[in-house]
Image (tube, rainbow, N blue to C red; front, side):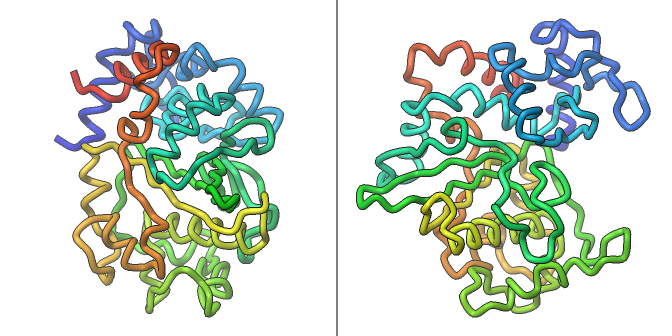
Length: 307
């Protein structure tokens, strides 16, 4: 059974216990058992209203596109927010998380309104994109932090969060409107100092490589522009360990490698700038803290176990 089916069945099974919601919310015009009838309940109760206010104040689009979080229990955007938003003002937690990624990270910087931001874009549109709208119609990153090394060097931490996603081996080079997507990013991709070394650029226009390409360019251009005074970046791809359909499938047939992580690292001048990690391992350092038990218990029951 595919990972998405396992998680869908689990979501239905735990729906009444965790959410006290009958399900059958509307998704793509139909009632679905795995969609909550009250979408706001999809967010952990400890952050629910603060998250809603944060998205509204920052003009961030929800995946549902209707001004509120989706009721879809398998939403990766909601999963990212549930995992990370509780620690947005917890420097001690972010320090531990980032030091676990790289022991050279000795400090964490406050960003705009916390130590984590969501659906972050650069100051300027990427390539020939037309906007910097957070969460829609531009390249943005699910969550964003800034680490600091002992020599005061700042490193942008770009985090892309996945849940049950998997992708087909179909080129998306041309959009439905007829736009050639390569034209949007070609100038950046052909620069001598571009961090991506793929020979045939059209091989990048398969998901999830298309998204990884854009986010790599985002991290690179943000450091080129010295945003937040940063001189380097790190791209973290959070994917559940059991999502083999995403982790182990190469959707672009001309790219070498046996896994998504291996194949994308082969496209980079500096492979160390890209890391794949599971949600449990990413948040592992905070499990030892007594005052995080409420959220970690929620994450364990909802996302981290298959029982």
